[in-house]
Length: 431
Image (cartoon, rainbow, N blue to C red; front, side):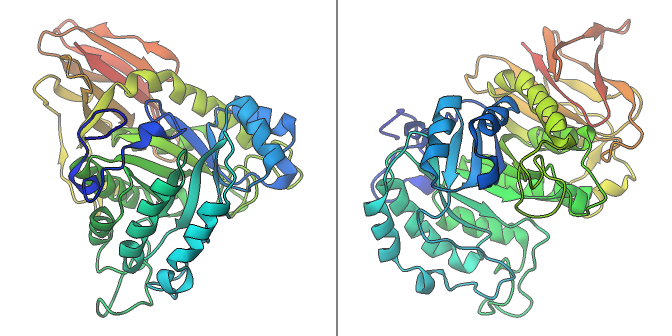
């Protein structure tokens, strides 16, 4: 069991001395955390960091070890996952796959830990980005060491999405990104070797497509459930094309579809210049139109998050997607209506597709929930309003949406109806 909280640890964390869990780290994992990538030096004044906190951001990834800025982070309750503490690593195009240990031997990490000066705002240590599976065994070693050497920080590692390139020849080939024949195998190898209690990956839906996003969510969320980990996901608030700006609805859809698969941590890319275009702040540190959109959507997530975090995902279902192009390549069948044993006949009254996460209370107190994402218009081009309808097997029902408590109507036939809008999300609770 974990020496800190007394809970039984998943099998993958029981090798050697049981090291405890994330509860002894600074990030409060009992709450839903919202992060962002990149805070450039031109956006580290007190006013900027106050605005960051007011935007609903809990932590910044790829933050520099800037002590004056970290002091302000502490003042405003923002955490940092700091880069540059230990040697950096990026999988890139795969040319360096399998070379992590040779490039960054253990003594470099040990030296970094010995010279590290702690700060209350440093929540995590950035261990690298998008490594090949060929480096997972070594990552398992150095992350286990980091878990011991950095008493107050967790090791942060982000993975490739499923549109990274796969091996074409043999397991010995290194010129590929994933280092495995399939993405599912990539995630399985991570779970085998790397002892984090989360899986974090990036997926930029509006630069790829919705179907691949669903498939990526399916693979990672199922791996998380099987190994007792949380799912973290990096989403886009900026754009890969300079003429495009992500809309509020596009931000909502990314967030709520991830939550329907049980995401516990959302990280928006990018807040300031990092990659691509149309960030939350421009190159002068001034707010763009993305600031107001992100603040609004983060606020909506917050109104659902406390209730949402009382539950854990059991499974996720695609309801009403018959013949829909967003199901192409997704390794899961759609259903016309969903029966969970508690919620019966779940569907939209307009025949619109919805993504439904089936959830159970963490306390096993007899409460069940559905996290529903409206999936009829993933790009937010022609939004509609409709209802999620269902029976609840004699139970009391309430719902929480982005505006707070949501209206639950009792229909003449005894079913319930909960309003939802395109790209929106609602948590439906039965007791």
